[in-house]
Each structure stands twice: as structure tokens, then as C-alpha cells.
Amino acid sequence: MKHTFVLPLLAAIFALPQTHGAADPRVEFRECPKCDKRIRIDLKAGKAYVNLSRLDGVDKDAMAKRAASLLDDAAIPPAADMKLRPLMGWSSWNVFGCDISEEIILDTARAIATNGLKAAGYTYVNIDDGFFWGHGEDGRLRFHPQRFPNGMKPTVDGIHALGLKAGIYSDAGKDTCGSMWGGSSEGGKDKGGLGGGLYGHDAEDCQLHFNELGFDFIKVDYCGGRALKLDEKQRYTEIAEAIKATGRTDVRLNLCRWAFPGTWAADIAESWRTTKDIRANWRSVRDIIAENLYLNAYAKPGHYNDMDMLEVGQRSGKVKSAFGKHGDTGLTADEETTHFGIWCMLSSPLLIGCDVNAMPEFTKTLVTNPYLLGMNQNDLGLQGEVVVRDGDAVILAKDAKTKFGTSRFVTLYNGTDGEYEFLVRAKDLCLGGRIDAFDLVEMADVGMFKDEIHVKVAPHASKFYRFDAETRLERRLYQAESAYLTAYQELHNPLKAGTAFPDKANGASNSYLVKNLGGRPDNDIIWHDVAIATEGLRCLTIGYRSVDEGVFFLSIDGGEAVGVKVSPSGEKTAEVTVLARLSAGCHSIRLFNASAKMPDIDFLHIEPGLNNLD
Ligand code: GLA
Image 1 (cartoon, rainbow, N blue to C red):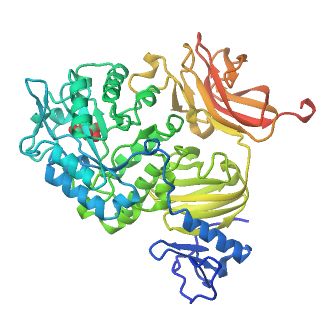
Image 2 (image 1 turned 120 degrees about the horizontal axis):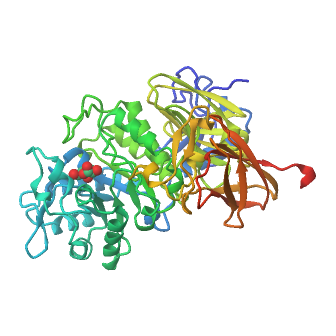
Image 3 (image 1 turned 135 degrees about the vertical axis):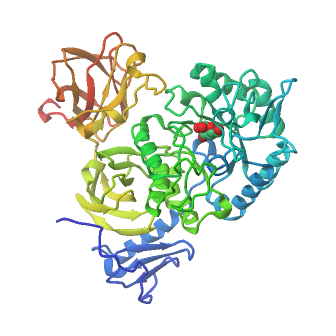
């Protein structure tokens, strides 16, 4: 049977009076045969309403229990260490550019502390470019005399007094981005940023920011670093060392090099910008999403891909930004929901970029939605992984409550310009049995399905679900483009640098494969988190493409390597199978060739081995 969530648009509010109460006083039963929701959460009222007309064969007490637990899930569990979660807060750049001041920052901080944003977890108030006035002859960093006439201390103290954290900004080189590219209403370049960067001042600037002034975060940009042709890894490591030398262990570091810098970034920073600057328009949001789809393997608790500051609250036709001239046409409601939801799903830091004093109600509801935030703020630290992709229509998934558990976050992202009908298959999500679907944006349980479901999604819109299934299935298919490439980087041409990269390929599984592997020990591909349900023989089938005969090595959990020979495949993906006995639990499977080029890799497929060999 073809199931579908797309029902005629009916009132979500259950119109009929309560019939009788459930055991939990927060849960009420209602009858509404015309309603398309099975359970509706009303956070303001602290209630969950169960629709008795839509129990889908489930006992009403069991449904009441589900309703109560969905209500409980609105409370995001506190982190053992906040540093392990993506940063949440506000940043001055998108809306004010360099036109910042003590007054603007403190005004914003007061609004955040009182308008519900702080309560939702937005705690960092980050000052971006525009506060500099170069370094003095004594080597001390100076602050803009008009924008921050009292220096930075009153600003930092004012932010802290509100129970918030304070963030600052610098550049790895001598001059800041604003001093090169502008960004203030005065027009032209922001001259205060000349000589304002960290270069030559690491120790004294870090001492000033973190010990004297008490900042808690720093974003380090690279316009000045690039101008001096500095080596990113070396330079950012020096800066991380200088921060460490202050004795502060709670300072959070963001690298801003506008491309995935390399897997070394996770050794020194909490987050790293992966793309060029965001703009308040759909094209920019769509391109940033596309560029982050295959970076999931590099995110882990405390270390995240930064998709840039949020352009929420910038509704089409009503954009307030320091960059009005640069195509900031704003976002529609659907686009804004996609933007925020995908940033949550991909575990990006969440830094609101609009004027919070003029934030539309729609935006406030969106960015404080605890169910969306729960995708971002949890202890698993996972970035959603592409499960099925058809151009800009993508199904993403990641575990919700426990790793390899029966609850998964599932996103249907329609980045195309037309309506798209998704076919969501339970087995692609490794889920089995009956699946209950909770819509995170609607805050409603929208029903159950088995095996598969069709969902229509409007252009530029997305659906964000949590699927709670009866069983979790052992995963069969692991795409190469979602795997960990130890040498992966986007700073240099990978063909010249000899580093692997995911690339589009006609006819490949999900249309992507990984090219340019091998030739050096670290230019490998690893599937971490290969979960095996029960011990036994497995056929590990590797999909590859190779013009010539070739060889690569396969090693499981760092164990002895097995050589795998491949024949030429032509333009199509060919397969080669290796048998291995795997214990129950989590494994890592690595393919490499330290001395010669490897075939391109399309996927790894894992099936139980033949019984008679078991
Ligand atoms: C760069 C960064 C932006 C912002 C500006 C400030 O462009 O990528 O996020 O910090 O510099 O000048």
C-alpha cells in the first residue's frame, strides 16, 4: 500500500472537546476525525493532545505514553561539557558588518538575555570584525576610538553580567578582512583593521583577550594570513598554542578559512568554516548546504563543520543588513526553515546573524524550537549523512537518541525549484517494523508507516522528522563520499596535492565516488562506525572504478592488511568481494595503498556471508 503523509490541509487544532484524560496530567485525549496529526504538542500550554480518531491501531494508553515522552523530549538534556556541542549564540557580522559599537553589542546582549534566546541556549555574543584600531607601538592591540571608546572591558563585563559568554575575532595574518574588503557604512576599507591581526602578536593578544578582558571564544579569519601566504596548519596551530598558554581551557576556537582545511583542524579547533561568506538569499544557502553534504565524517563531539552565521530573520523584501547591495534578497518562510533545520541536522554552530531586537515572531519560534535544536545539541555530535540523493533532493539521516538505536532524525531536503516527491524506504534508513513519525517543525506526531512512504515537499522546503522504529537493521550500504578521507582538504587543488576527494560520477551509487586515493600512507578511505549486529561471516563488497588493473589493501580495525586486486572496470562501477569474520559491535574498515594510486571507490556493501562457510 502506498502511504503518504500528504493529506488535505486540515485544521491542526483538535476542535472537539476533551473526551477523557490520560494518566499523565499533561496528556489529553481528543477526537478529531478530520485532523492529520496523531499527537500534537503545545509547548506553551505544556500539553500533548492525542487524537483518538487516529490511533493507527495502537492502544490509547501506549499513545498517551508516547505523547508524554515527546513532551519530555522538548527539554534538551544538559551537556556534561558545553564545549562538546556546537556553539550557539549571536554574531555581529551579517547584520552590522563593521558598524558595531559598545551600545549595539550590549543592546543585543540584553535582548538575548530576556527574549527567550538565552533560555533556548544561545549564550555566545560574538563581536566580529570592526572593533580594531591596529596595534600600538608598544605592541598592544587598540580598539576603535568611536565604536568602543571605553575599550572592550565594559562590553565583555556587560555580556558576562547577563549570564552570557563573550566572543571576539581576529586574523591569522597582519591585516583583517574588513581592512581589505570593507563592510562599514562609511564605505571603503575599514582602516582600523590594518595591522590589527594576530601575526607577530599571538601571545600578547591572547593574554589580553582571554586573561585581561575575559573573552570566551575567538574566530580567527584568514584574509591577512592568505595575503602573507602563511601555511594554514602551522599558523593556526601556533594560535591554538598561544590560547593554551593563557591557561584558559574553556576558550573555544573557530577557524575561518572558507573551505574544509584538513582533518588536522579537529586537533586544534572546535569548528572550522567550510565555505565562503553566507548571504541572505536562497542561492547562498543552497550552495553552502551542497558543499557540506559530504563532510559528515569529520564532525564529532566538540569538533564541527561551520556552515557560517545564520541568515534567519531576513525575510524576502525586508532584509536589514550591512550588505544590502550584495544580493541579499532575503529568504521565504520555507527557505528559512530549510536553512535553520539543515544547520541543526548537519551540526553546524548556530550563530544568529540578524538584529535580534527586530526578530520576526516566525523566526523566534523557529530558532527556539527545541526539537530542531535537539538535532544539534546532543551528546552524539553527529552530522547528518546523505542516505539517498537525486541532485538537490536529498534524504539525510543520523541517530537521535543512542548510536545504532531505533530512533533516527530524518531530513527530506528539497533544494530543487519544483515540488519533489520523496520515496522514503525504511531499509535505506536501517529501520524495521512499524515506524512512528514525529515532525519536528510541526511539533506533531503525523502517523506511522511500514517499509516505505511517499512525501511531497515544496520547492526549497524540507521536512524534519524523528522516526521511532521497532527495530534497527544492520546497515548494508556505506557510500564512499560519506567516508573519512584522512588526507581530505579543500585548500589546494587535490590533483596537485595528491589528496582524495568525492566527485560526481554518472551511474555511480548516489552519483558520487571518491577519486585520487592512494600514493601515500594517509591518502586512504575509512568507514568508521561499521556496526555489526551479530557475529559472523560477512561479504565486504567494494564498488570501484579503475582504468587499469590495480591493487589496494583492506584492513579492519587497524589489523593486518589484505591485498585486493582489481581488473579494469571501464566507465562503470565494478565489484570485488572480500570475506571477513566480524564480531558484534562497531568496526572501522580502511582501504589504502601507501605507494601506488588506488582505484576510485564507489561504495562498501556488507552482507552476511554464506551459511555453509559460517
Ligand atoms: C570574512 C569572514 C566573515 C567576516 C568578515 C569580516 O569575510 O568570512 O565571516 O568575519 O571576514 O570582515
